[in-house]
Image (tube, rainbow, N blue to C red; front, side, top):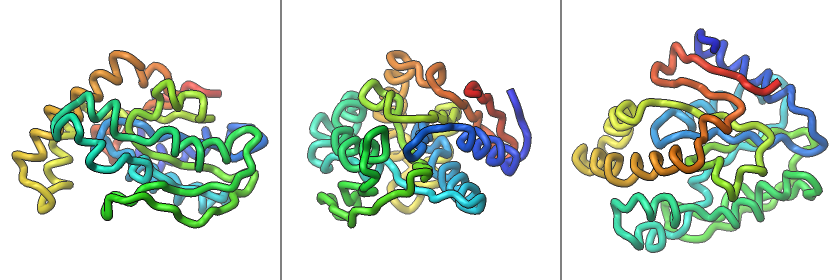
Length: 224
């Protein structure tokens, strides 16, 4: 287990990504619970890799959601709905992960859904460089449907109670504190607990980042 500053963490992660040797873009998953710090870490990592001369493709699971009516068909607070009916994994594989993977043509789209407008999205097709790096953040990224689509899997580990505290700050002005706490405790945390119990994402991950204190993180790199 290593620990240090945020800059040291990012340097270590960039080095681990650069150590991957494949003949197609390197697909990196940044997995973890909601409000664990996945998006922030992925954004920072993309900047570091870009500064080191890499062609970086940045995308997120938020661009691969099902429409709101389907996501909440079982109810706003349903953990089963969160785990089973939220994300369009077929679309994710079809337009992004498979084109960038072995045998793919590297012609990809960043998203298939616009969450703000709650409608399908069809952004322009882009061609990635053969040595590009995809940095993709989201929840449940090591599910069986996606497990073999990543060259490197990073799991951002944060205590569930800490994610609630962060969500209360992040969502202030968007929804009430009562609503935030209820969504996390009834929908998001139970669905994450199911994911932990059935998939064991921290055991599968190549790198685990302990992010309870983002400025003094600890990390374990298991890949060579």
